[in-house]
Amino acid sequence: MFNMIQALGLLTNPEDTLKDRLALPDLLHFEYRHQQSYFDDSTLQLTAVLKTPELECLITPSSDTVTAALQQCSNLTQVSSTLDVPILNLNAPLPLAPLAIEKPWGRELWYTGIEKRGVCTMGGIPIPWILDCLPVTVSGGTYQPPLLLKLLQPLPDEIFGDLYFEAHAQKTEVYIVTDINRQAWPDGVGRIRYGFDKLKLEQYSSDDNFRQAYLDAVNRYAEVRSAIDLELDQFQNGRLADVSDRKAWLAGIDDELLKKERDLRHEMESFTALHDLQEGDVVHVPPLTPHSLQHGVTVVEFQTPHYERFILSFAQKVLTQDHWDTQEALTRINLNTEHVLDRSDGELIADFEDFKVMRLKLDPGNSIRIEKSGYAILMGLRGDIDLDGLIITPGSVRYIPAGCQLDFVNKGKKESVTLLAIPK
Image 1 (tube, rainbow, N blue to C red):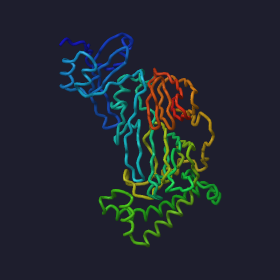
Image 2: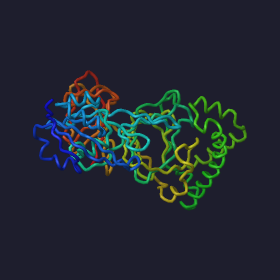
Image 3: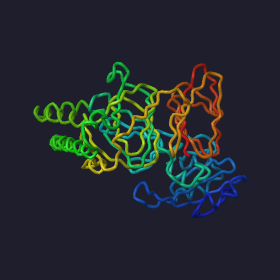
Image 4: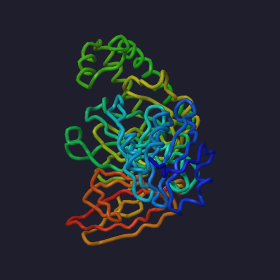
């Protein structure tokens, strides 16, 4: 069969080589080396087949099988079918698939995560492969991880569903509350632990004295926490299948030890502040702000792509590290952080140095155009919305490449609500 796919060989910088050819009708294939810095920094050689100017492509690890397919096929559809690799249209919104990451407190659904624990995909192809191949075309900039989008789904059980009390040195986050579990919060008002209690802080003559008192309380709790965790380690290697198992196991722990744990936990938590949350609330979490979403409160989270944290405390066994970071964190965190809670009905719900988040509400028949220079990430929350012929339904998540316009129309019969994150 006559091979109509033009081979370009191994390219050091595919986009730079192709920049004058992307607007011309052609069918190309090439290889490039992708550095997996999010794994072990190993190099993976990838093969891309690109149809221009439509910017339809597929990407797959290089192999003899791929080479043979390219020799036998004459179009992109044949290559896709032969290799069972999806075709992406880089001129259209790309679907982001959820990746479930189990946590002691529940689970996270990742949509754009790129790290050892998991790599998310666009249209079935790992995100970093696509961004490394054509970063300007897809993201509008150089190759780098996209904004992180997660759905946090804590268990409804008190303690078991409470997240780490943690802070981040670099990461900026915003939570949009989408559900309050009525089993956990019958009145529909959930909680977040955020910062420190002002009245408690005023009881100390200096911030340093407060820090030391809090650290002492944490250390006392950590001692009894370690004693309980030591027994946990002897039961199913410290990993219990579900909350019912953990509750059954705890029932066998000495009552005095459990009472001591409860009393010391309450003492430790008395230094921190709890705030009410309702569905629709928006919480800003700047760097170095201690916070802990409480059980039964589901949120959409947008954040900068940083994977670091300080764990100040946790009322369960931490499975990802063998220590807490309380002492180090206390030398850096802001004790007087205000709770940045937004209950307004405005369109712009977060405006940070690195990115902004908009909540677009459209009545039936209304439309809106949003300007951007790079990529964007959107999630449908309520109702259906038309994005240039593509219907975005509730729960649908899309990566919008740099070349795509953001023209939204509500063609349905009820209000639509969509979240849109745009990097700066």
